[in-house]
Image 1: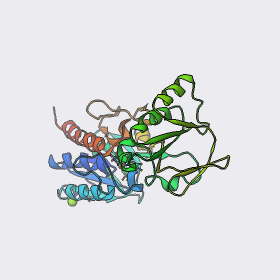
Image 2 (image 1 turned 90 degrees about the vertical axis):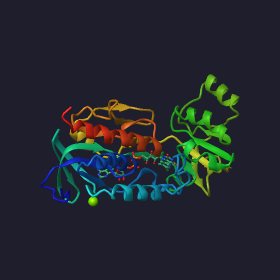
Image 3 (image 1 turned 30 degrees about the horizontal axis):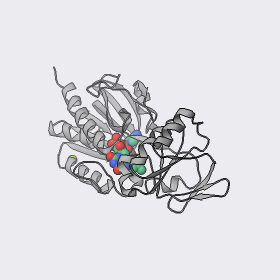
Image 4 (image 1 turned 60 degrees about the vertical axis):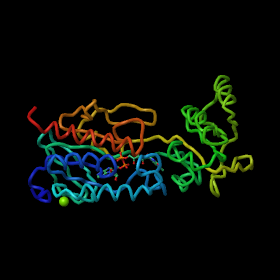
Length: 301
Ligand code: FAD
Ligand code: MG
């Protein structure tokens, strides 16, 4: 079929064409299904120069991994790719309609939501500009490159204890409490046992590579900062379709069962948008399974 003809329903509309969406699209393409990928091109890791921890691609630029994935997916003639934002989704199993930001109407028998999440950073001056460069959230992704240097953990809530207790394995760690929570005696004792310095003076700004300027005028020089962001699913499509959500440690995500099916028949979800632990490897694995299970749902079995 010519998937560009939007009057014909495709078998699956994959919304989000990054790691999870590409991986789902690939399984569907290889099953000779007619696939439409709608992608806005705003990968979560677009701020980082290098991606780490994904076997076979360790240290490679995030956009290079995505570009190679896309070209492998697009080698299948039954995949049609549209650079657009899906703004509305409605309908039911076998009869879904997705409208994009150009007003185009696409019809599909299944929907795979692979929209990823958006990070909400604390509003500290200088922090957002350094996101993905010297301010990170994932020690496994960016801790090793700090070469056991000076690490600051900018607390956003009591959950930052987790970061503070992990990061001594990657460098000399200071927890900048910044009035985000009030560590109790037991927490202070575990921080002390891990050799973590606790700084309670409020943060004014971040400057240079990762120097934290405190309200009392001191400047603490770090090689990198870690901050636990709040995450939210990138688009309202799952709500529009009526999918249930659940709460993970960084925010809400789309509920799926062991087959990556959401609570709405015919709608699947994968990647950061549909799980609580996030990485490229997990998104690719999740997408592969979602693609295969979406295909299975199209069979009369
Ligand atoms: P994403 O990669 O976020 O892609 C979602 C896609 O869906 C985007 O292209 C987006 O534009 C599109 N989209 C969303 N809504 C719509 C819509 N309505 N219509 C059309 N398209 C839409 N992980 C690692 O494993 N290693 C690392 O080194 C690493 N470094 C990171 C550094 C930073 C700064 C950040 C923030 C994250 C990092 N991660 C890393 C995590 C990694 O980026 C995510 O786990 C991964 O990108 C999730 O893939 P995904 O396909 O689920 O979502
Ligand atoms: Mg094609």
